[in-house]
Image 1: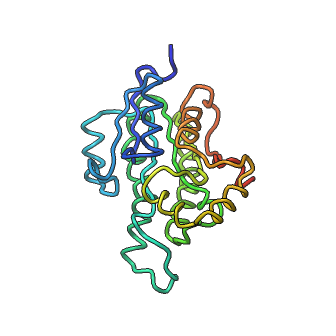
Image 2: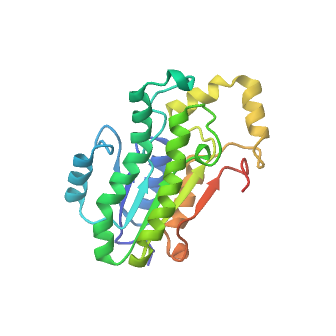
Length: 232
């Protein structure tokens, strides 16, 4: 029997790209997947998140994938508005906190669970976009992962993190890719050890591992799935 048969999985940010690939992968493995995006549930709103969990019931697997740059571009730090900072931090970090807080009681009652946070290479280094709030929020997800792994391990709940490299997976990353031009694109790929961009499925494969029985004694870890762009 599959590790995932009978498991309920909540995946945020499933409108396209990485979130969609994660949801499809877990469903293909036998999990019952509940995918949400900003058009169905605002995961930065505690009331909406609580209502979602009340509706779907206990969750065995949570993948916090919602986030992104929310349509922003780089500005010098002295020109960043308060609301722009909060929008990016809320989309990436606050959403992770709210969804985790909402599912943990059910996981504790069940005697275990799997949580995977999708951060970014920006959280381990710097943001290619130069958006200060994005790099900060993604680094915050990594710290949150470690803290939650420490707190929740005694309840059989593992908490791990993936830091993807550059993946052309949504309108924002496609716009970013096109902005580099031919030479910038060539240079970016040359900095990747495997000499190719990643795919959404590459990231989904990491989620598949962290949520499987094979990873039952792994928690608090951050893995860069980036083709060797950043080697730690």
